[in-house]
Image 1 (cartoon, rainbow, N blue to C red):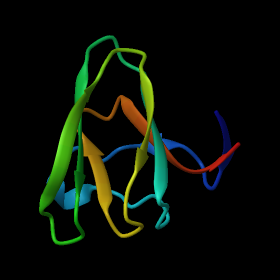
Image 2: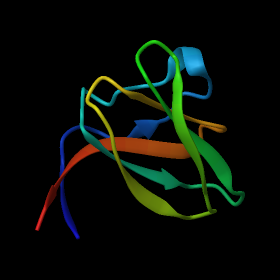
Image 3: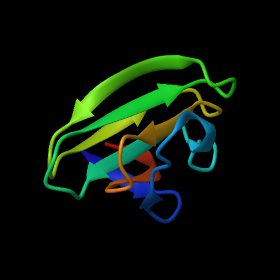
Image 4: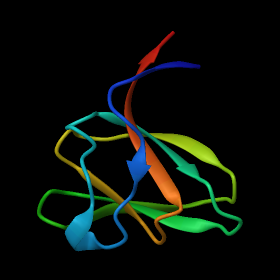
Length: 87
């Protein structure tokens, strides 16, 4: 899978009140730079949880979401960046 970066990578917020929509991106690549598994949460702009998943140590995933939805993680070791998938 090829991706196009839409912004600079940044640490995810660590609570429901400081999640990010990553520049209104509809896809966000998250990477766990730590040595422990971390829970990642996607929520609406109204702070209603849509879903959660565990991101393993050193793992990366691309989350597809509505542009206004926000992402936060259980630790700032989880980094995120808005992306577009190409190909």
